[in-house]
Image 1 (cartoon, rainbow, N blue to C red):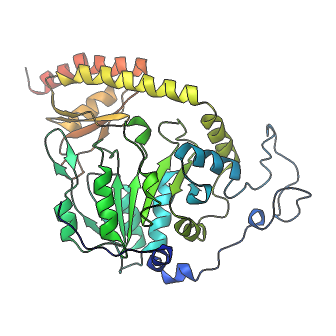
Image 2: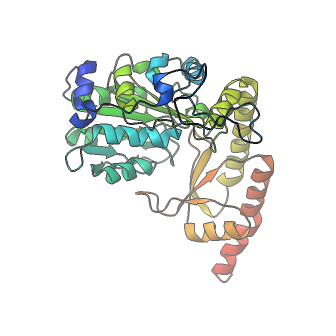
Length: 372
């Protein structure tokens, strides 16, 4: 890789990258932020009686904005300090907070590398930030960042990377991220979305945050921890970045039942490991079944809980699967993914149904369409 110019920043340099009005903002102080939930609570205009079926959750009370028990448990799980974590409503809120904090409408730029998760570009455009797209390189059985094309662009305020990437499943090498952090120093942040890292054999990049103040890592409990409906994510960054984002996050972003569910999930490591192993076994079974299927032109196994395939007609596959009661995701609108379909790994029964569909119904539907 060619070297790129860099400037070594400290935390004050990171703060200087934020929008001036955010730096000057006096954040809203909620009742729970100003005082603990101990004692007689007459400071938050709450109903004093819990609702029916409360089961000890005290849903009549506002929750802790950043529950310390959950934050400490996540810090232990992710091997970071508690003050380096901001708990968010899934990774989506972390993405939105970063863009609203650091990007001025019509002034600052955000870089994405499609095909990738659509919320990076959408959130940037909602904020009025210019979106610079540097497409991934399709290199046969692998997708890679186009490092030379990235360096050909002026540094941006925020650069979003996803590893393992959604929807290609490929990973980004830590050496590449380090080079990009060096390039972005003094100019902007590098955000690595690790929503699928638990399905990978690679290590998280959270250990790089101490060396690179402009690195942010996103994690979530939605995927591997089976809590998509609870909306619990974590943004991991230097405390200076976390404290900036806390200025604009909602006063009570984390519903009490979601926090309770997250703590239960984190307390069951054996169940977590068992499910990961089961999903990998189902993924291996699916890949074996699809690898020789006549209608599949290419298959990218990736390092996540899904595979990506290319067929002759993605719309026909999506429609035929829907008629069989199976929902798949058409990725054809993404750059470089014409007629590509993403398939999530399900349980044993769901995998069997999908394999049966490909071996029987989808092949038959193709033959009918071609008049054979």
